[in-house]
Amino acid sequence: MPRVDYDTQAKQYHTGRRVSLESISGWRDALVGFMPPDDRPILDVGAGTGIWMHAFATWFGKPVVGVEPSRGMRNVASTRRRDRATWIVAGRGEAIPLGRDTCSMAWLSTVVHHLDDVGACASELRRVLPAGAPVFIRNSFPHRHDEIMLFRFFDGARQVADAFPDIATVSREFASAGFETIELLRVREPAATSLEAAREWYVSMRHTDSAFVQLSDEEFARGLAKLDEAISNGEEPIPLGLDLLVLA
Image 1: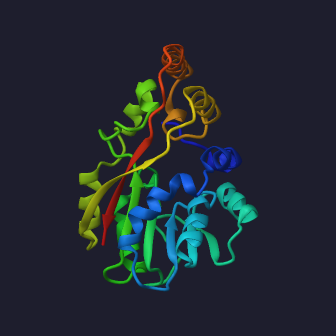
Image 2: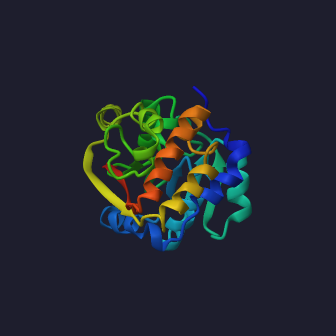
């Protein structure tokens, strides 16, 4: 199956994914009750262009280490870095280039479906985190896409996302590494300003989103046609709802 070439798509990814801190403040509110009283760095696995690194450094005033396999994504993160106490390094979730017990918590945003081995990542996180440290997984898990608007129009993209590792699989792999599932929450972000704005975003992310890139041109065109019909009918966009799986 085709994958996003994040080295060549890094700038477009950053443009498409970049959001205001206010628009994602629901994640701060969801995390704050689980944050450990620990000054060790926050670990962002699959940090991309550093969008969440900046959010955590701003919200929580802690150092943040991002681990990212794509050179292109790391380059964008480095050139756009605004926070002194943040670092991004080459690595993968299955091979984290940090020592034992070095981080206070771990964050994985839309990452688990990119991992070749979820269990290996869980073992690495158990190594670099102290006992009791939380792991936060922000994702759209299979068959839980009811608040993701694009899947309403692009059925092929929904089918791609339904093949991602599900909650039971992720929880089982992390349990094998010594983690307990603490909670599953639904966190919402504001809706697009209009369906027309959403359409522009979908087109711009055609070769950058991991679900879109696997669609044929015909499938993508069918999705746009469904969206255009909804626009003609005066329909309104819905807020984005994603899951937050908390383990420790």
